[in-house]
Image 1 (cartoon, rainbow, N blue to C red):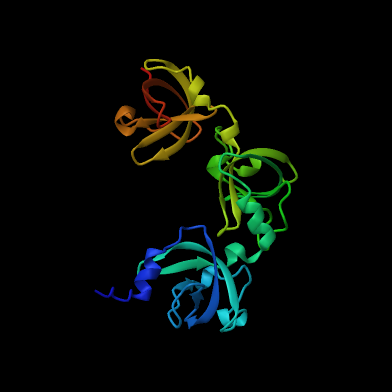
Image 2 (image 1 turned 90 degrees about the vertical axis):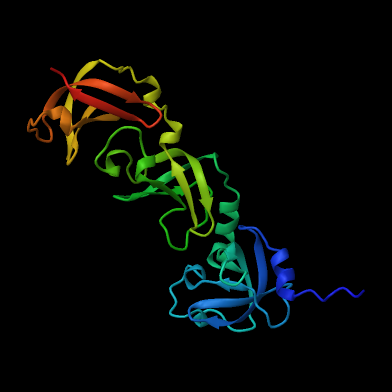
Length: 264
């Protein structure tokens, strides 16, 4: 019995590639702001690759035809399988800058890296990592989100680091699509919760840091605040900055939370 001729698209689906793999192909056309790609190995006339417009390039362009033409060769990184049609979604900008791509692929999760703070913003800190190539967009390849700056409480990232400061940080992830290395400074700091000496029943004093509909937060350590629930306040009126004597009712080290009550 003669075996049936396999459907080319089914063959393609069976050889699906993993996210992060780099594929090559030929620009087959455009679909709005997306680029359709005939990947090497596709059946003629059946392009299975798609580069969304926002994944095409680091440059600002009005339409992908401003930088690509039908028939042009393209190299891009796989992001995921397109659930709409079984094709492959790709990122062109991930591999657009070869030096940046190689640098990012050479950085691993958990690595400890060094660099210089290039700028400080309310949303985080950019870092020029040692050995990085010039970035096409950002002020540095490294980026530290605000929660990863320090275990201690602070109001402004500028209270923790300053431009020009040398730092060491642990790599959380190197993202070729974003062109960034997510970093953590506090991952190299001792977790103060491990040494928290407070226990249930202890009485301490601290300032009110926040007032919320369900209670108030009181700072009891430089790195730790606890919630005094409104039920515990008994109708008492308090203001931010006011010093309160509180009793520790619960210590949740895993979630880094304290439940407090007013000390009588």
